[in-house]
Length: 337
Image (cartoon, rainbow, N blue to C red; front, top):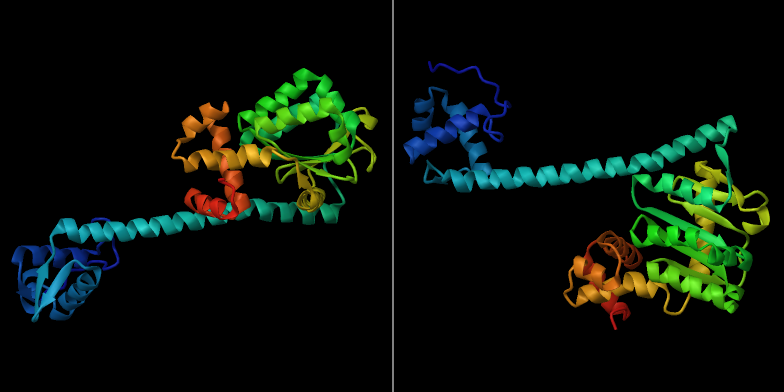
């Protein structure tokens, strides 16, 4: 009766094979061409146990079977397949982890919304002045690029930004550097004021997107998925309230503001030659010529981070998963002309 070694068949060895599989593979290497019986005898195990290990090695592509005899494949080729399979599993698991982590934010908002609904407690802060608003937006954006959406229905607010060069410059720098991805909705009548048009041109040149509507319901802003600003009295303008507003972090309110902005944005008309053309579409056109991100950044006088942010915006708008797909879809839509 053969002596059966007490080993856990599921225990890992060499990072991929069980002890029985590794022992059978090593024996196959040494014997080079052997039957099941010869391998069992070499390993001092039963024929059934040796047969199971050989069958598993055969399915893993570690050995070949010819007329009842087994020949081990060269270790370089045999283990490269195991490594490739293991890498594929790691990639799949990594994607699953990313998907799970990505869902936490949405689930957290749902949790917070439910808790706030039950407790009737909504976190609201008062922001005094446009300088403080910029500082608060900067705090929100400190964890990474932040999407900022504004609806500005009046000329007075825009003119005040024209006149406050220092504050306007801070916003423009944040957009150029890729820290903010800015979209703004303005009323069509604002384009009748030359100073506003020039100012909007600078904002667009920095990389923002601007669209117009005949009328907007009121001033408000949305800052990523977690914050929004609302006027002290809905339907009024930022300027009319002395540039004071409420900063709200309630998921319910923020979600409603985001939905409202997207609805208005989809109805709005891009400013001719605006950011949607000079920003995202421009980097696509330059990339189609084989120009690197660094060269595009120097050409447009923006940071590499901004270039990559505009690529991301273009891919999102085109529904593309890769830059190649974005290029194909952009060509189909005539963006590269």
